[in-house]
Image (tube, rainbow, N blue to C red):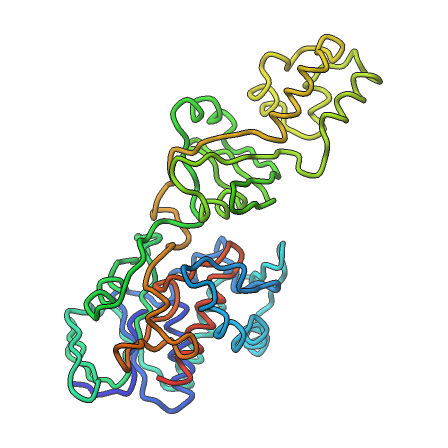
Length: 392
């Protein structure tokens, strides 16, 4: 049996960060992972350029049954700390939009940075290792039985992530482990995920597949103003992914396709000045013709002079207050994150240690902390991993 100080299960963003900090404290640290490669989600994130943090990060950008839990870790290891690490390795990056920071080149640079840090601090990483059993023994130590032998440790960190993108190796291991130790699990569901539509709406809107439009998407809880993308299954794009984390089945969403313009005033003015023009010609300044044709088939080829003021108001209302009721989501297959998870009230917000099982820690996405789209979830991984790494 191999004896180490710290075992971290999960070689993703949170696990690697925790291991680095543990190694800095000269703790003999071992990472175990069932997949064949560390940091798979890092590699595919941000379209292969890794949206590694956000300049405008705050606790309000996170969803949790305990909204205060994330504050301590995020305030002690901030986006600026991680940016300094990226700069230390000379990795070029840029702000894309809304404070989102991406690598200029490939996500692999972020993963290589973390692996080099692990190597510097003598962290051992064992891949293709399946966890078969975890036993809590005397002195609050742990025996980890695996497909590649048994291990003994003082501190055990669960950093196995959520259920999103199972093709990358996602599994319910972390939730099952929490339950085995009597820790509460909040129901999980897909977050930051495309929405599907009922057949009638899908048949109508699928012909717009590939069209992207800036819009404000809202429900009674939240609103987001970014691009939406029509797909052959439903709706996607940043604004839709964001609102999906706040959407509940059976609920309608409101789409405002021109949030910064009063289209009714514009159309009335156009009717006065250009009454001979077709509606399609006027709206082509704002929308692709295909969009106008699908949303306003009755009026698409009509001239403004033949459209009444009441009809123009109805058109304006459709543009500013389009209601749609999604059928569901595309699920974990395409979800970027998992909502819900391991109950935060069962852990110290400062150390990520269980309040009932000394020496047991949970970090990253497996916990009931879910960030917005735009680098927030990576920052939670860095911050929670860092926090645990100071004490394991």
